[in-house]
Image (cartoon, rainbow, N blue to C red; front, side):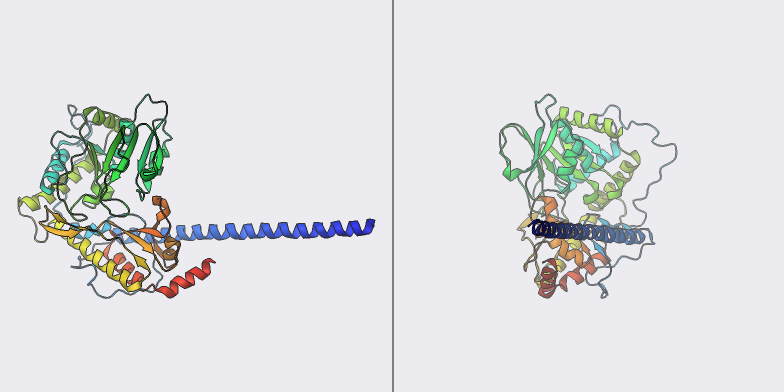
Length: 453
C-alpha cells in the first residue's frame, strides 16, 4: 500500500510538473510573439523614418504636376510606408516651386532680448507675426480676430496645456474633468495627464461623461481623426469649451463663416505645412485667461522662438500677398488653391483604391459651400479614417503586415477595426500607398485571419 501511494504521488507530481512547464513555455511563447510584434513595428517605423529623413535632406527634384497621374510607380512590397504621423511633407512641393520668396536673413545681433513687445499682454509675441495672423484670418474668413488676444506657443500642444492651466479652478477640491467626444485626438489623454496635475484630469469620452460639476470639453473641428465637423456634446452648466481648429482651413473643409468662440487654437503645421517651425497661436476672448496662458508659457519655456515667428510671419505674408495681389508673386496657383486641389486629387485616388480593394470603407462627408474658394465641395481631411471589413478585427495589424504603418483606432478611444491614415506625406509615398492598398483583396484578409487564429 505504501509503494502504491508513493508511485501514485510521484505520478501526480510528474503530471503537475509537466503541466506547469507547459504553461510556462506557452507564456514565454505568447510574450515572445507579442514582443516580436512590437519590435517589428518599431523596426519598420525606424526604417521608414530613416528613409524619409534621407529624402528630406536630398536635393529637391522638380515638382510633378500631379500626385496620381505621374509615371507608374513600382512596388516590390518591401518598402515601409509610414503614415502613422501627420507629418505635412506634402507641402514641400509648393514651397519648392516658390524658390527663395519666403527666405529671410537674420543677423547674429538680432533677437538677443527675451522681449518682443513688453507692453503687449503676450510679451513674447512678435508684432509682425501677430499682424500676419490677423491678416490671414481676415482674408480666409475662418476666424474672428477683433476683440481677441493672441497668445503664441511652441505648437498648439503647448497652447493646449496652457489653456488647461488657465481654465482650471485654482482652489477646487479635485481636478476638473477634461473630455472629448470619441474618436478623439490620440494625444489628448496622454498630454492632459502627462504632468499629473492636481488642476485637471482626463475623464474620457464626452458621450459617456455624466459627472456633476465643472468640466472642460475639447471640440476639434474638423475632427482628428475622422474629419467630421464637431459641436459640443456635453452641453451642461459649468462647462468650458476649447475649440481646436488645427484643420479649419480651406484645403480641408469648406469655410462658411468665421469661428468666434471663446478660445480657439491654430497651428502652423497644418495651416501651411511648416511643422518644423513649432508654432501655434490661440485666439482668446477673456483677458484673464490669455494672461494665465501667457504665464504658463513664460514659466514653461520663457517665451517662444523669435526666429521661428519671423519665418512664419514671412510665410503668412507670402500667402496673403498672393490673394491680395501685392508685389509680383510667382506664377501658379496660390497656396490654398494649390493645396485644395492636391487634397481633392488624393481623396479621389483613395476612394478609388478603397473601392478596388473591397476590404475597406471610408466616411461620407456632406458637401458645403466655401465662401473663400467660391465653390461647394466635400470635406477632404488631413487624415483618412479607414475601417477594415471582411472579418479583419485589427486593421492596424493587418496593414502592418503589408508594411503600411497607421495609427490604430484604440488610440482614439474606439475599435481597432479603424485606423487613422495620414494624407499629408510626400507624393511618392502616397502613390505607393494607393497602389499597395488597391492590391489588397479578400484572399489576403483570409490569410491574415487564419494566421491570427
